[in-house]
Length: 208
Picture 1 (cartoon, rainbow, N blue to C red):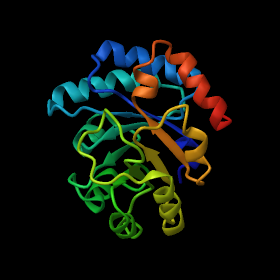
Picture 2: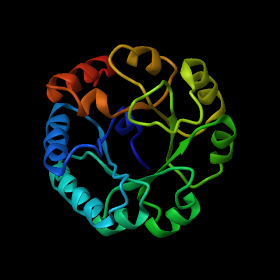
Picture 3: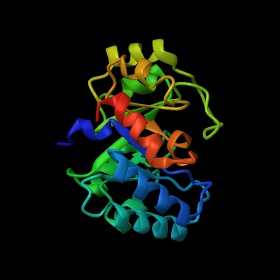
């Protein structure tokens, strides 16, 4: 059973950055206090994805920070990652769980209340609530939850919730006040001039 505090400050890599930059960002962010890292690669090159995941895994070695792979169960298996995060159009959670086994982390993005309710019976460990606010890193937003939506999601879910989308230092306190398990950020850490400073500022707000 995962310690839910590991969802608290969940870094998602920016697939617009090259491997060297991602490794540098993850290394600095982990040193400064992020609690989970998801490697994302949206361009469909599986070999590049595996290579990137292996590089990040090396950075995370010995840190106790879980490595999560976005979308691709095959990549998660290939690098023996700690888990996978699935979207609504990816492999069904039931199959992912069968392939990964009972000890790996399986997360699922939900973009509506109906999806959240359906997910309660799935073999997943947490749900990603997307998108909370407007964001430049995700352009195919189906639904913007907002703070009221997060509160409604909390009331409906027995699973830990991680909020993603447009979350930064200015709204983190409001988001966490809904009672969710954690926040996932991309550009609020990855695109900052001082990654360590940005990460530490989040840690301070999150009392990490």
